[in-house]
Length: 138
Image (spheres, rainbow, N blue to C red):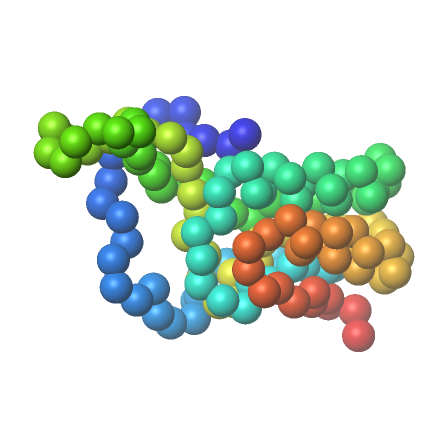
């Protein structure tokens, strides 16, 4: 699973309120010819990113090149079961990547149109957001 090696602050505040607006950075294809773009804001966990990566890698069969364009930097904490209120914040359980509509999640290159679309479709099933497959080749 992806997680930061070293962090300045171990725990962070959760995002409260709206995570409104479209992505400005990370919204265009930078490396590959095909990409998976998110259509709604969400927190994508490192486990979901890994599941999508494995689905694509299995579909690629050692051909083509894959880029992961998001990284889970934000720690999410949980308190243990049946712990009373108070007594501080819980321990870090997992990390998430915050994505906005328009963020490119994955990119592929070196494949035919049909192979790339199939691989990205399999990855999209593993993610908790609505996505769209985009390509440079039209």
